[in-house]
Image (cartoon, rainbow, N blue to C red):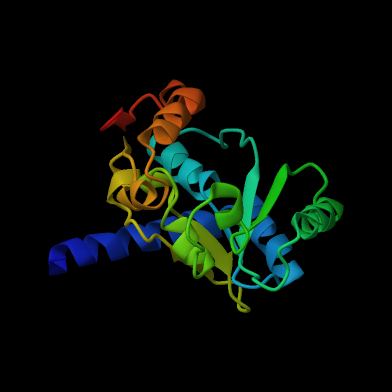
Length: 196
């Protein structure tokens, strides 16, 4: 990556962090998740991606999210019921939020693939590059952003299959079905599907 690209990536990262820090609702979500103190936890995918696309499309206040994806990594507690308990606890804090909590240390079983090594490793394998995003708060209420596939596609509003997803899952049809079902272009009409 050239210095120019690196500077552009850093500028985009700072922009996203600022957008989130200025969004009271998003900060409340992040504080609720931090309150659980889950290991290696992030709020990810559409929570971050939709914010970016809403801002780029000048949609106010926000598009409605089907769920708020919370991911964490705990190889010592692989029972799916633990995830339901975390969802219940989050619902006690914020009852109207559609919480979805997943332990990425367990997801390789459900997906019949090699185990992930961390939550960020799992995020790096999400189906679309523009969806491979996660955020969390540190103890000082600073937003930390992870974007293992970079920020170029999400900022250029490109929907593209993630090569790491194909490497781990090996099935482009899952990606194609997601793109069709999600119908993102209906909500954000400036999006481009790079490959189908």
